Length: 415
Image (cartoon, rainbow, N blue to C red; front, side, top):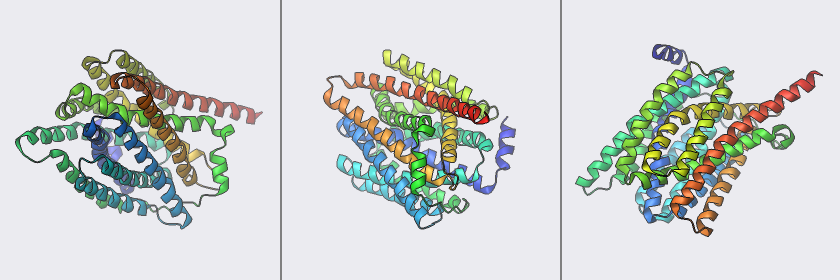
């Protein structure tokens, strides 16, 4: 199986391999950022509202730079590769900024805005290259390779970070700040691969593109899918780090635990990469989604360290499988919701608006619950867990109903 994986990977052109390498490097710091930075923000004041506001700012910044700068590139016909260089320069600056203004919640908010600038620019370039150059029949294996590499890094990275935090007790330096230095240095490696990515000049976005993309009669369920994937990410990025630090007590426990969990997931993702294809990806998604929902439900009703271990083990195994399917459908949506006179780029830029509305409105809902409810943090986290589990279900249902609508239309057209 692994020999076959290596052979298929070696047959990829250099541009495809470079994209995978870029995504693996991204995975290294994104894993740290998604878990550790949210924990870092939470521990400044032990206040969940800081984490929620922090992520609202982040998602707003992603929208501004993904769609705003993407539109400018399409207007002036600039090669999408420019977005890579811009994003990595901003990324490095964001961590320098966080290092200079440490332990200050306001400056952390400003960091998150700059960080969102990086991520929005990066994903604009990534999606454009994927859609322009990776055919639908190759996307399952491509996405599986990215997910498998992600898993390897999520085995190694927690162990390395655990060692840093463990030895911090013997030295006066705060090892959080050492991470602020290490992360941007590691990302300098990305510049070796950017030059190998494809040249792509974005299509200009027109009024007709906007009208077509938001045509709810044709694309209601695709829009619903985009909305629920945004909701899913918003819940996940806020609640999982806080649950981890509350139940595992300290960072060392969090990282060691995560490392063991991800080791199990790696082998399953590689195995499925040779089975998954365009014909069976939906049925795989159904079973994975159903189990993920039930696991969320169980954990919300039995919120303790033992069910947390089971919950995390289940997510570590199932989330990468879910994410491979999700990534494939993300690309499919941007590739299909387009005018006949245009390419994928306008729908890719416009998709970010639906995602941003979903993410920000979800976080505002969380913020209102925190402000106006009398529930404890633990009870709120249980509510958010149920909502997160439902988001997974809604993602699958949206895809299923879109294909049902599409098949119905195809039958009608034949008559």
